[in-house]
Length: 188
Ligand code: ADP
Image (cartoon, rainbow, N blue to C red; front, side, top):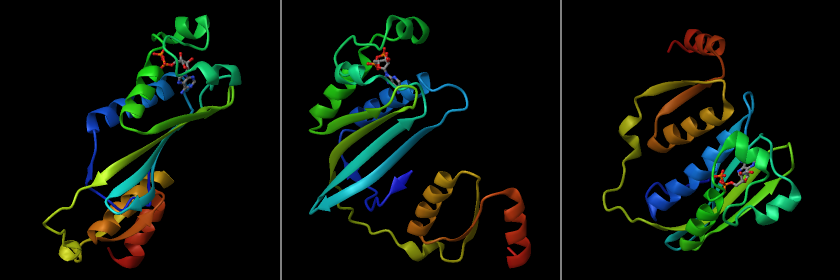
């Protein structure tokens, strides 16, 4: 999900950003049992001249970690317990590499967790704004009307942001039934 992100083209180390997000997401996936949920949110914290500050949050509803472990988790070869190593595998290196990558980009990484209540990682990074010479013309799509149908609020919000930005008029439905009713009443 995106919040308040005004810039579409940024200059940064995409390979490292991808690696950081992949590491956090693969852990979230590994430690969240079936029926749980994983959420990624990107928020633009601020913009100063040609630099934007983004916050990436990866949260899950999985097993979380104890307070004592939170102090050690970014150190190499640390895992919660031998049991975790046996059941989930891994080397205990992922998060120490992740922290190194974030610091190489002059960013910061933090975590918040409660045992058995999930985990939230927050990564703050800055990016330069790319000045594009050809300005995008938002009125190109003004004759198109779209209907966004999804039962996931986050997906609806993200799609709405994209459509709004490119100038497409749209309606939103949270279910198939609601979609049919909108189509019927508005003659779409
Ligand atoms: P590994 O490659 O073993 O997963 P990491 O450095 O990525 O190594 O993670 C270290 C330990 O931190 C994991 O073994 C696990 O105990 C704990 N951990 C990491 N991410 C999560 C998460 N999302 N939920 C619960 N525990 C986690």
